[in-house]
Image 1 (cartoon, helix red, strand yellow):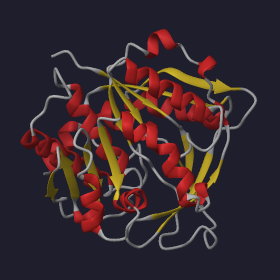
Image 2 (cartoon, helix red, strand yellow):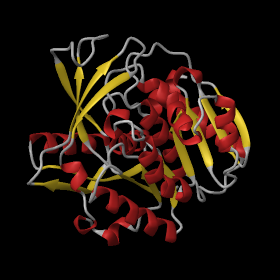
Image 3 (cartoon, one colour):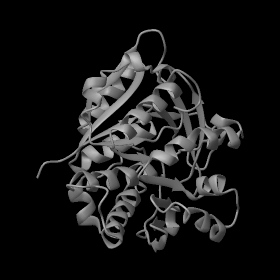
Image 4 (cartoon, one colour):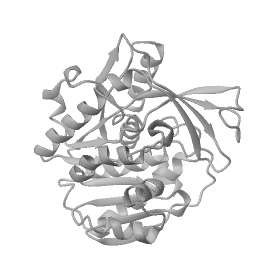
Length: 318
């Protein structure tokens, strides 16, 4: 079997987690260092499951940056397109965990926002088969935003299979939902597979009612949507058809990286196929069910990359 190469483009950063459960960032005094960043988590999920994953992004040429490279290398991710910046620190995020496993974030931006098209080996990047755009930070400012958009348009012209996860963070966008959804529009138009959280779906559909939001999704007859809802499972929409796929019942400790693991599990399965865009509705349901299992498995441990399971661990657990 010839596996397809999957490229994940975006931020790789340090997550400092509070070690004090049920404490806010304000209340916490102790934090633990972990590797993070949504696209990096996706690439690590693919590699841990046995796929071929490449990561493209920028970190500082500091101890944190080298730690991050070592971490994703250890997960099996190819780092040919990881850029070190000597003039900016590695991006940091501080994270608290709530009783239900959900999180609160504070970001200190650094090198990730400085990725430019001139940094990249485009000849090598354009050999990739499946492309994932899923950055919480990429659309905030240039040159990163411009680089993201240029790569998107090129891969669209090349007819590559494109995946997109908006990864909305309210504290990054400071409540400017209109700007966020506007910048996401080209990615929604170009992507074949789109993963959203329920919160993000409500933002794009401009409604607080799930029934109305699902109706909004059904207008996209050429897109595949997966709306992740945590313990409430995943709403899957393809060609106007809607189904609900349950999530395994688990004791959630930390939801960090669960959505990224879900996306990684989807893209890993697509990388096994000859033609990712030609899959039946029932085959897609099986893909989403497996992705739910991978995402649930991540919630049983603390951290994002560190909690990612191997294929054997997923298959033995469910």
